[in-house]
Amino acid sequence: MKKKIYILNGPNLNLLGEREPEIYGRSSLKDVEKSLNKIAKTNSLEIVFEQSNHEGELIELIQTASKESKGIIINPAGYTHTSIAIYDALLSSKLPIIEVHLSNIYKRENFRHISYVSKAADGIISGLGVEGYIFALKALINKI
Image 1 (tube, rainbow, N blue to C red):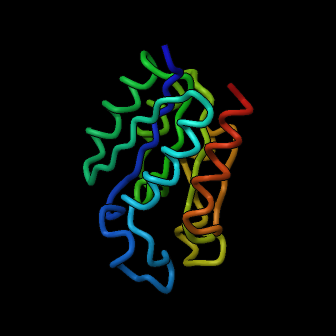
Image 2 (tube, rainbow, N blue to C red):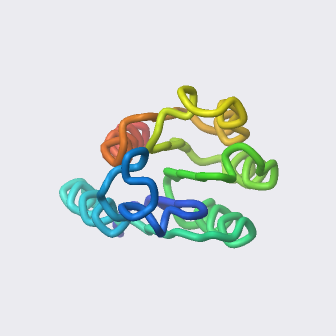
């Protein structure tokens, strides 16, 4: 049986490639998923790739991942700066976690400098665009 990794994406990432491409780039979330599936396949991994605009749904996915997978890559998007509930769910998972942000959150507005998720993450990749997901997957593969 293949090892499973959950890749979770928060609110508005369904608009990736359309919304503010000067900040987030022109690749779609589907493009990201295809790239990661290629890497996963060569490493005998299965990826569960999900996006939700709803905090509770992301929490349920984290809880499912804690039972079914070996690790989580999460781009919590706007919930990065607001969700203690996602932080608590990630802590409860006891899995290796890599946090990803397309933009450099520390070069943006001050409120974006705060990440509740970072306190639960083993690593953070910020500001490298969609390439950050690839680095996150490679890091998680090495970790598991």
